[in-house]
Image (tube, rainbow, N blue to C red; front, top):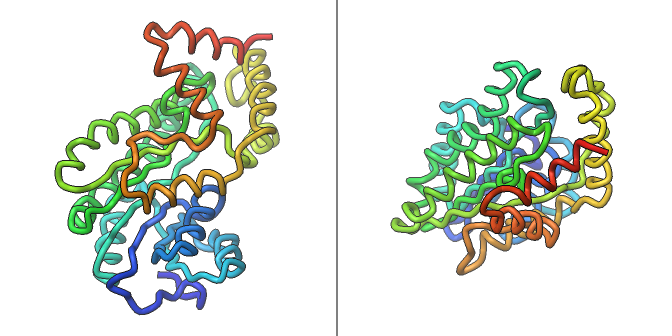
Length: 292
């Protein structure tokens, strides 16, 4: 446990609902952790690297709330199970889990290394498994909720995101299959699907690598078109707080559907896929992302 005054946990309150939120150093996870605390939840907020919690702590201070900030690499199954066990030991309950930790990846199948592809799956799929699996027992006890932030990329396959979308598709399949099983024992399972969210994604891709190193010379023209289109999309992106509001609302709702999009744009995008029985609508659309 981190020892900063801001993160020192208060005395457990048996009536205070408890939530674990992963990946809270920035963006959606940060906004969710702070918003949940404001809404009256005891929040265990995890970050992967020591020192990466400073923005989170600053936001919590501004909001006037306390967070119990923990270090966790979600790809470490033992550490994930130990964290869940300790939370239950300290607070006596676990009412919600928000699987938010994840990482983007840009590349394409021919030029990506197998190691890179496996790493994407470890973070975005097995990381969710590692946290969710030990959480099921305490969530059964509290009749709680398991929320996983996926992406519209968990529904619609997107150019130069093959590995990332594959991992998010896998998470969607896991949770959709788990949903009725968990419901039978009193646990609600929900996925939240954001579209483009305001981050430094496009700028960081442009700044750190050129098309040849990310996608290979043979794909460089297509990749340049993809980046141009993506930059336009992210210029009108949803703010992380909008996604956090959807998540926190789901945590407290009496009834919530399995699949939630975080914006009208995300709903329209996902809806096109779910109505596309032969795949021609989606592939016709995404083909325009890599061509003039």
